[in-house]
View (spheres, rainbow, N blue to C red):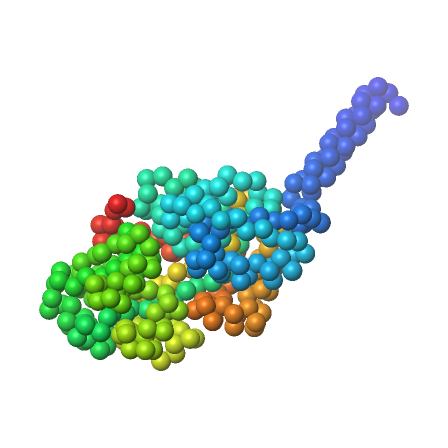
Length: 333
């Protein structure tokens, strides 16, 4: 065999070795560790302990942890309407060991704050929506309206005279009331509070006339006659208050919105890990005991059909609320 043939075979063998190394290398990049998770996972909850975000997370985590076979440690990182907790996860390693309970405020905030510390589309891997929470439009007994149509008629006759409370500028309760005004063609006075609880207390005390509030919080007072209920904000009636119609059923077609929570990881999470987490969440939310427990808290198990569906939902929520913020000329105070 002459020298030229020897050189050809050497080159061929070298190229074959390089190709094999590349294939094996790609496998190590794209394949999830077969033992994932092999140590505890951290879940960042961007709110204080005891609130709806924290409660929903703590109701789901034991079952998800059981399915994954590893403890999930909850760390509360409240502040800036969920921005601080979300930003901390956005800068974390995408290995499946740091997750975030994403809240609806996280997709709204970029339209309200100059800086939020994360890019909702670029910095996260959506896993699944988990829970939705219905709101209900209520008033105190002093308001002379017994159903939604009577309420709208009364409010149109008294522009800029009737006030409503909210959990703060840009909160779900605020944005839903702005959407209500836009759809109904009415003008109300906004009284923002630092949290939902004091706003709701002032509705009960007749200091504030109207509010959209979580159905579970309002229901005892609706039942005892302290509050009037005009409709729930979702497209379906509440499981815990089936006698209260939706706002759409009562004549405000399209006036829908819910608070929601979901699970996300940092961007570029390997697909095998994403699939494993999605399956664990979906299995948890399909458990009848979990669904019943959530329902007692006024929450609905609302898993996404897929991570892609959750991603599309997040984008639709961004578009929806950014339009409301723009149309209502809302600015963060």
